[in-house]
Amino acid sequence: MNINWYPGHMAKAKQMMQESIKLVDMVIELLDARVPASSSNPDFHRLYGSKVRFVVLNKSDYADCTKTKIWLDYYEKQNIKAIAANALDNRDIKRIRDLIFDLAKTKQQEIKARKGINKTIRAMVVGIPNVGKSTFINSIAGTAKAKTGDKPGVTKARQWVRITPYFELLDTPGMLWPRLENALTGLHLAYVGSIKEEIIDIEEVATHFLEEMTSLYPQHLIERYKLEDLQQDGYKLLEAIAAKRGMLKPGMVPDTERCAKVIINEYQAGMLGATTLELPDTYL
Ligand SMILES: Nc1nc2c(ncn2[C@@H]2O[C@H](COP(=O)(O)OP(=O)(O)O)[C@@H](O)[C@H]2O)c(=O)[nH]1
Ligand SMILES: [Mg+2]
Image (tube, rainbow, N blue to C red; front, side, top):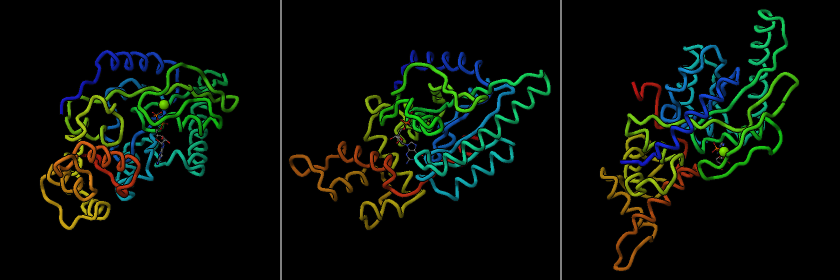
């Protein structure tokens, strides 16, 4: 699939991030638990240096918990602090707040031992569009300071939110730019709603999606769309689902475009069951 990534916007996001990261001691990386590899960016990690890195596998309520565990083990082996969360769940937010404050305290003590000052620890949240950054910042800050929305790229300006006397959060999340070298990345990001609808071919996205689901989670498809068997061809499956749902154009032709939108929207809303499409070795 050929995606127009608006290279100008990406270059700007990259530049903004490179400037912001200089201001912080901690980076809170929000990944989509369904596609942790596609939603992370190794180019960006290179800028971390000695900064504290904290990974949140967000939207884990939509992910396959067996595979989430594999991802958490993967991070643990590399000594990277990681947690699975649902940013809409208060208990998860409380656990994360405690963890972040612990990490901040440790970092602060380290600085105090070296420099003898009580430094305010500053953190920023980074992630791809629609991963839950604004929701997360709002919940952690305990106020509705950052805007949230369903469409990618809702947030604009920059400000600090003081959360404890020695901990501040940048209220503007950093937008991670996608890796372009792998075609599957574009598709996976489209499935989870991180790419503007206007720049993707929704039928192509849905066709690939149905093929991946057929091989990874066939039962989810069978149950959701009341299918008897799964044909191998994704496009045929799309036509079959359109017909089943009564989405027809004049002449009884299956309305595959409308059906494709419905399927991808249902996936984004978690209606197709818990899925994780990538494992730590996906891009190795
Ligand atoms: N199910 C679920 N939905 C979430 C979670 N986190 C955020 N959302 C929803 O995902 C959508 C995008 O969130 P938003 O915070 O605007 O993402 P941003 O673009 O990264 O700032 C909103 O509809 C949120 O309610 C989560 O952990 N689980
Ligand atoms: Mg936002």
